[in-house]
Length: 294
Image (cartoon, rainbow, N blue to C red; front, side):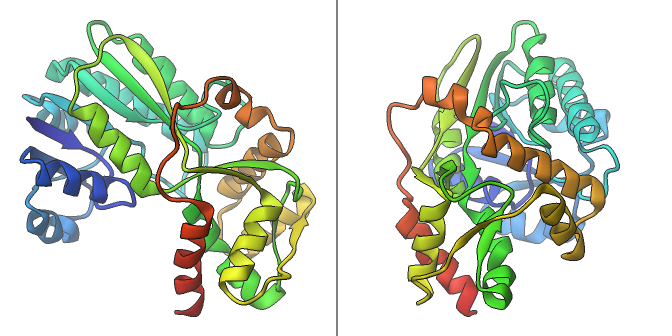
């Protein structure tokens, strides 16, 4: 089969490409970075270098494919986070229609059933809505849980403050997922026939924020590592001091609020996947420890 995947050599797209190539498929990888061309080709893929905001480029990259995988790349410099994500989805949809694509596996998110109050996830809600209007195109919206690797961004917090935390409490339920488990599901969906418009949740483990702190702390010989709940303002200021632009920091605070109020996970718990991914919290804790000690 012949696929195009977006996301360059990112945390999901690279392992996804590796799975598909190992299975004997032809894979084109879209990247905006010319410097990634060599690495893409070394994987055995075709590099398509261009912008996801260029519909003509996307149309060419999507044409003649059995299926495509779409994800909206992060744009930390965007002044309107939801607007950027939503607009990128519209450009994808325009190219999908122009290229005559019939099967799309789309990376959405847990919480995308909600129209707002979820930070950047609200933009993915918009993408799902845009795709729902595509006629004669089968869409599989993947809704992965909270990425384990987001906690890698807290290594400095653990090292310098001796805590782990966010603007939600230790007893907050967390549904967690590893990018490799997302890639495995995406590869499975791309290689099989599906029809209509549907959603598939992806999770690797279910825990709480406090248990995450305990597991990561144990892995780095800090078994008493506490989870600390911040106020929204303290969380905002902390992210901005760490270098995150204000619009993105505010967006993440809003997402944290959706986790604190439990609304982010409501639909997931009523529509749980029949099985969870391979990577459990204890497995990721070893990965966290490697980064922490590096």
